[in-house]
Structures are given as C-alpha cells and as structure tokens.
Length: 126
Image (cartoon, rainbow, N blue to C red; front, side, top):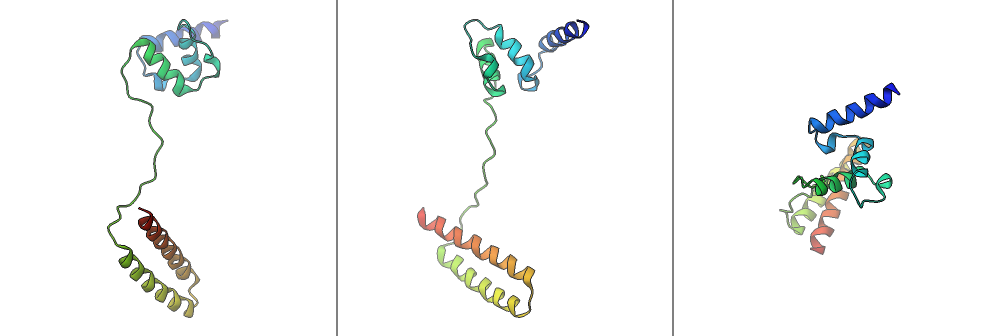
C-alpha cells in the first residue's frame, strides 16, 4: 500500500513539474490517457501514439515524433564514364594485389568496385 501511494505521488509530481511527455514511462502515459474521455484502446497503444494523443488533448504544440534515421545518400558528382574509369583502375590494382597474395587488399578493392558498380546503376536509373 505504501508503494502504491508513493507511485501515485511520484506521478503527480512529474505532472506538476511539467516533465516532457517523451521522458515519461509508458505506464505513466497510459494513466494520463485513461483520464481522457471517449478514448478507448489505451492499453494496447505504443508510447508514440500515447504522446501524440495526450498532446492533442491538452493542446500542446510540440514537435512530431522523431523520424527514423535515413541512410545518407552521397551526392552524385561523377558521371558514369568517370566511375567506370575508376573501376578499371581498381581492377588493375586488384590484379596486382592478387599477384602479391595480399588477400586483405583484394577484399577491400572488391568492395570498392562493387560499390562503384551500384553507384553507376543508380545514376542510370535516375
């Protein structure tokens, strides 16, 4: 019983302190969302959904949920012909590395060639 009282007191303290909703736990957010009239399915909602609903209900203008990180796409500054010249140079280097039995260098060059080939295909599609 003492723990329940402490939990409730802690929840009230966090609301009074105006802690950002993003920092609250799911349990706390669900308790707040259950107080919203006409809202159902709260227990099955995820944290992002709960925060947006609570913000809408309270009229808090905040940032939308942070989007997932997207892969950085390099700017394509080289033409296909330039890339193919580079591929030919790397193939010659790879052939020399094979002659010296430098397996590590061969693997590095193979990956670079592969990456450049993908880049030429991407440019051709655009």
